[in-house]
Amino acid sequence: MLIGEYTHTLDTKKRLSLPSKWRKELGKKLVLTRGLDNCLFVYPLAEWRQITDKVAKLPLGQADTRSFNRFFLSGAVEVEVDKIGRILIPDFLKDFARLDAKVVLAGIYDRVEVWDEKRWNAYKKQIESKADDLAEKLGDIGVL
Image 1 (cartoon, rainbow, N blue to C red):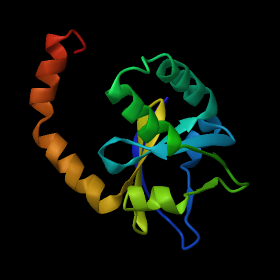
Image 2 (cartoon, rainbow, N blue to C red):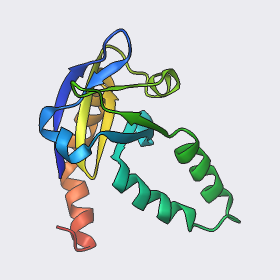
Image 3 (cartoon, helix red, strand yellow):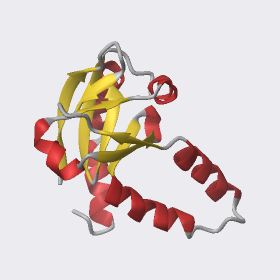
Image 4 (tube, one colour):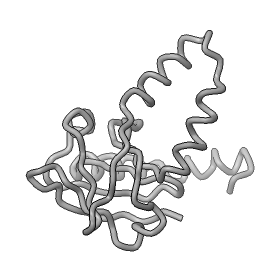
């Protein structure tokens, strides 16, 4: 399970070090893609295959489905973790997420999200102020 929050530096060659406690679970090959809220999603290869199997079964006739598929899948790249636990962030994904030197890696159960540190802190502050309301909504559907 991928949980927790880590701040790392994106080096000048756009390499990002993964937290050591996640490396075994993530594996040597990952898929990096555009995520929601202008962050990046990082998936272990096996998890990515499960998600794409579901996405592939969505109805092609619906414009929203086609748009999401294009957004999510066309921006995906397979990356390899190097010997010291780093991945390379392609320019187009770095630009999409507006990543600066300091980034936050957030473990979200089955994926990792990569955020620019300033944007993550602003987002987190906003969400923390709504935590009680979010918990109530989740309680209404039986999650909490």
